[in-house]
Image (tube, rainbow over all chains, first blue to last red; front, side, top):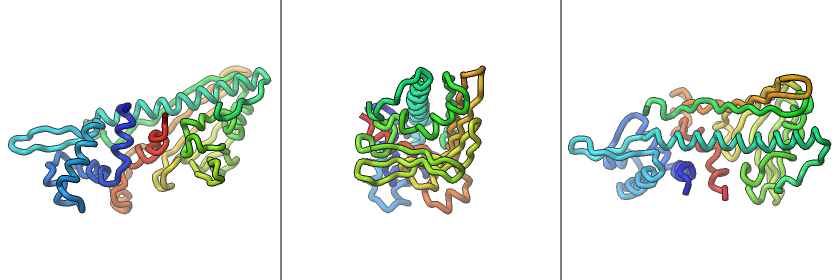
Length: 111
Length: 154
């Protein structure tokens, strides 16, 4: 799976968005995250592992605590994907204008 | 840095096309169905049948699916042919999570137009708005737009 797809999939879940939202304020442990959420600690751990695979969240040992924090790497992948989204659309647009200036008819949309 | 984690700089794209601004504008808007990459850039993906760009302020950009249902991608907020068109963008997400797209058409020389597209509005919303809307945040803005589209990419 491409990294940006992992990011989008990771954030497609409401609970995981809540986790990301809470981590914006700073690093938290699994226990701290689970304490304020209506899901079990194992469930939170599972969501955290999805977030880690996506690159959005990293894990570290802070003294005696194991904490999770947001990782900017995941966002840069997503940004790259957004760039590509408009590149593809505008390439198609420019192609259509070139055809138009040469007097050609449009192709079917799915071709 | 984590401080910047909830903001994204506007996406800026330019392309120069062999047409005068009026035709470039017309093809971008009224003829969007002739060039928009529906297979990859739509809510319906393989079920997407077409897309239309409603003219004038308040006009809507609407995708039609093969089953006849529609999905509104955005609403025109600025309509100044042949120089500028601006619209909200919320393909596949609630209107409240809309970002903004502005497209300007500048004549570079006769018969050639430079098209600049700026997609902005990724910034984290004010705290008051965030609180009012529960867990909505800049992240929701970022992913909301494209999660569904990307999930359906081949």
